[in-house]
Length: 180
Length: 138
Image 1 (cartoon, each protein chain N blue to C red):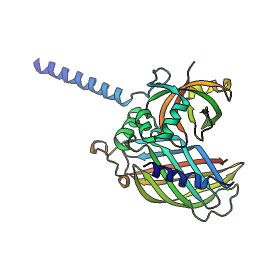
Image 2 (cartoon, each protein chain N blue to C red):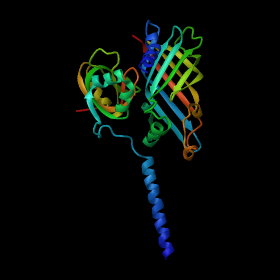
Image 3 (tube, rainbow over the protein chains, first blue to last red):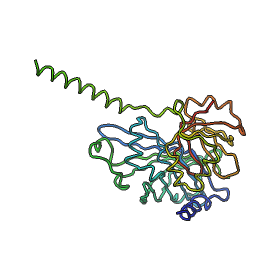
Image 4 (cartoon, one colour):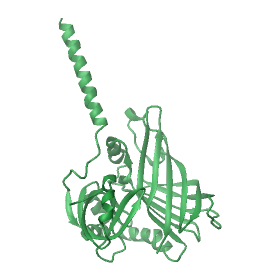
């Protein structure tokens, strides 16, 4: 377990933490949105860790499930305890690559990102587009993608099945600073 | 007459039940400022616990109100709210405390290198230990 963790850390961070092409944020923003005829549910996480390497397009994003804040504390409680089991699976991790990144300018550029999203210990391939641009001293990455609740074996009791969408929209805004 | 009493009783029960359900549905978030901490410790102990064994640290600290004492390494902002990074030693990680909105105005009185006491809810460990909804203690 320890070795696995170390390897993961190495792959995630050390491997892409050398040189000037690396950018990091520890306070990225990721939110999700569930729309159903009964109600709309939204939650925000402002403590997202993301590291991007613009020399090869590699990107690693991780977040803590318990950092998601809901308007209603009861929803937050159910989300953590019943649906996400955040004590057992405290993190969600994305590892992937920005395809054909090329040169970056201060104008938004649409890129494809392919990778693997791990939630509740289950990894699924994922593909999305994002807007990327260079800023004063950083790299901004912004976009959204859809996640199927059933892909991650999240059990939703039939009594609230109509309150929660089968497909959840996840939005991200990651403003990276140079990594040093 | 008897039927009427039963009807009134049922109506009262429904209203009461509805009221309780509504209260539960609108249950407020934990108020960190007014809650006693579950654990009181030094920032370095908290960090070392996560660095040495993240799984057992998760069991111990996740979702708990933690009061930490530590030295300010860095002050910053995230999405309009203040952040304080505590780090006493020269470890790579630290404790990142995300202040609650009400605490922001206290940021101006803080200096890097100063020792402070912060209370917040632990959500886990990425490169640093994360505390959210933080308030400054005294």
